Amino acid sequence: MTTNDSIAKMPRKESTNIPDGEALITIRDLKIAFGDFEVLRGADLDLYKGENLVVLGRSGTGKSVLIKILVGLLKADSGSITAFGQRVEEMSKKELDELRLKIGFSFQNSALYDSMTVRENLEFPLVRNQRNLGRSEIDAAVEEALDNVGLSQTINQMPSELSGGQRKRIGIARTLILKPEVMLYDEPTAGLDPITCIEINNLINEVKERYNTSSIVITHDLTCAKTVGDRVAILFDGKFGHAGTFDEVFSSKDERVQQFYHYNFVE
Image 1 (cartoon, rainbow, N blue to C red):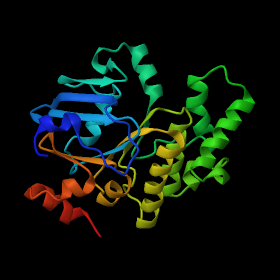
Image 2: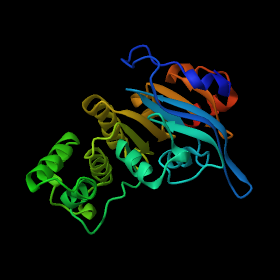
Image 3: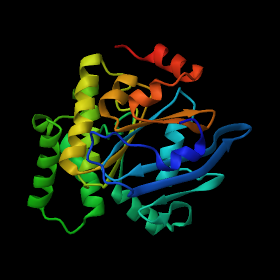
């Protein structure tokens, strides 16, 4: 596929159990510029229920900008995003706060509070958003989230005592503790060694199965894309020009796609 119009109903991998036709998030003709630099120039994209959708692109192509607009951290110049049937750009502050409970954002740098233990980092969003929970319920939620990312033993450690891969996992656990319906992963394997990258990729797939989430995975790591992506979409010049399964996208003869592949991907 090579046109923006084709993105509205992008094909999904036959081997997955993704329900047909149910788009949780719909992005249409999204545009944003910073000064004279146009980052997004009419981006169209759908996220379907029960899938991992990988958004690929070189650095500076607007991948992270896209998901920040999605959760209301940035405001687009024009275009629309519909999430769970509501237009994001028309939401009040209260509605945006409610949306952010449904959409979990796993930041590139993990965004842990260095002055808090792992336990306290996980408790923070839970206590802030669910004030009626008792001590035993909070403890159970923290222990479950840590167990699900394989790091129960770190509960009393400080972030400074963790490896880069452990920090990524704890960041994901802190996002999962509120049990969001959609996960946004911003460069989940950036700065990690190859073995840890494999562990994080496997975790993303495990999260999808265990929590029944839908996900947008922002990356330029093609190993990550091939491992976790039910569908892949590539940003070129501010638009999604190619989308489909990994093999469909990278069978394209488009020179830009082939350059991206050969520069990034290691069999």
